[in-house]
Image 1: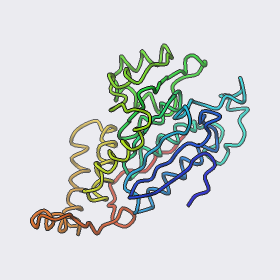
Image 2 (image 1 turned 90 degrees about the horizontal axis):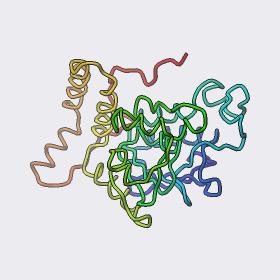
Image 3 (image 1 turned 135 degrees about the vertical axis):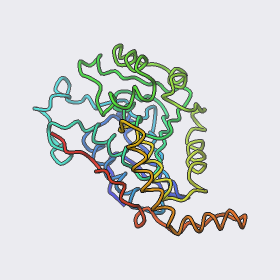
Image 4 (image 1 turned 180 degrees about the horizontal axis):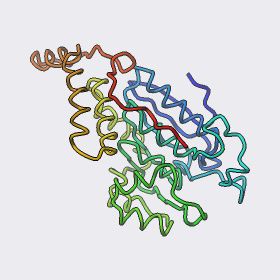
Length: 287
């Protein structure tokens, strides 16, 4: 188990629940959180006991944006220290996190328990299902801090909510309520604060408990990576290879046998050993 500084991690019944544990700072984002999140998804990808990942916060916030403890120097790369081991001085740490979530082999659910502002909102964009407490608030506040949208949000946000809403939120930098987030498609469901985590666990089990883990991992990558493709034929080339690989697998034989015998399937393949090569690089070079 990784030694996290900013997260508490509990793994039970196939679910990894990671909770930001800086409530006195409203779980604001710092270099230690970058390292912890990168390590978290390395850990969950490698652990075949984990079927899905839930990310939530402690206290009044999911993550209230960047830690502004350095004042006006907070976003000045020339004056940053303590992040040389997480991509160097010129790379956006939030973007590293979102790209790592994008590459996750397990479904990822956001259980947003309070303020989700700045990186607290943008890190949720590559997650597969976003749930929120009814009193949660969101904000893409970058223009009000003199910076620009980060963490690949210029790619993710318009795809999720449409260009007009993405521009409205990022131009104005206003903070808005969870109901508006649901209406725009940023959030899929609202819950009473005390019921949020249980609802997230229920959703995670609904997504994964009866499915083959390798098939889920591949479906996640096909759906997300498909967003980068220019033509359906590009996806056809990839999913044909993947489908053929799965068609020869022990999981298929078990899945069909279980269906015909009217019993629960016991899929033998594991994500750590049975993922086929899908033909794309994990991450393009950064320059």
